[in-house]
Length: 102
Image (cartoon, rainbow, N blue to C red; front, side):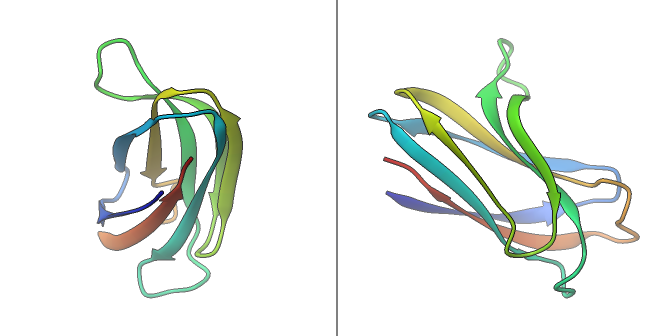
């Protein structure tokens, strides 16, 4: 199953989305675009929602430009992806992430 997550990222901010995985397998998250520059780096993380349901507890994280990817083997359950400013933003940007899951 493939899902697209598009949103805005503010200076010093983050955006996240939870998703369900129905069966064990590999999940991959790809940062398709981040603003108008192909070299702008942002944080990309894959994890599980925290107990309060208000954030992500990260299991994999990277600092990447468009094209960067994170992959992990997962069991059935709820997971989340987060895109965040690593101190490189000077203005709000649009971004798009693709989530591929079993």
